[in-house]
Image (cartoon, rainbow, N blue to C red; front, side, top):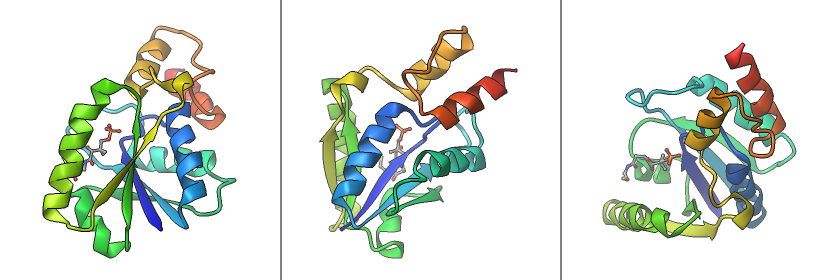
Amino acid sequence: MNGIYPGSFDPPTKGHMDIIERSAALCDHLYIAVLINISKKSLFTIPERVELLKKCTADIENVEIITFDGLLVDLFKEYAIDAIIKGLRAVSDYEYEIQMAQINRQFEKRAETLFMMTNPRYSYLSSSIVKEFHRYGADISPYVPLPVLQAMKEKKE
Ligand code: PNS
């Protein structure tokens, strides 16, 4: 099975890494797709996020980082995708995700979405929260992989 795990990854967190490691173990090949969204204010550029994800997944052989700026379903044919992988943290994620999963299937019949429950350790975690705490000097080392921690420190200096 070829899986695709889409997101903004600004920055990748340990919550993302949990889903990446567990879904890579289930997939033959896992694409991590970084969404190019120029309207969204970001901390890291797209090439920086790709580089960070490469570093964070260096030990996982069947993972490949790609970028996209259209519709996720348009990647299905290009990359022979079988399933979209999504992490669910809490009930609050559910409403948005069910909407996306259903509309995606309207446009691409084969577009199945597989949901994985986030490790409860990271159920409250998001890239926005990590950025907010980091901005005010909090220690975010428990929440992000080491390469991300280093890059965030450099951004602040
Ligand atoms: O990390 P994020 O920002 O929560 O990820 C959101 C993402 C990239 C998964 C979502 O915005 C997405 O799939 N966008 C791609 C555009 C698309 O296919 N839209 C149709 C479904 S609404």
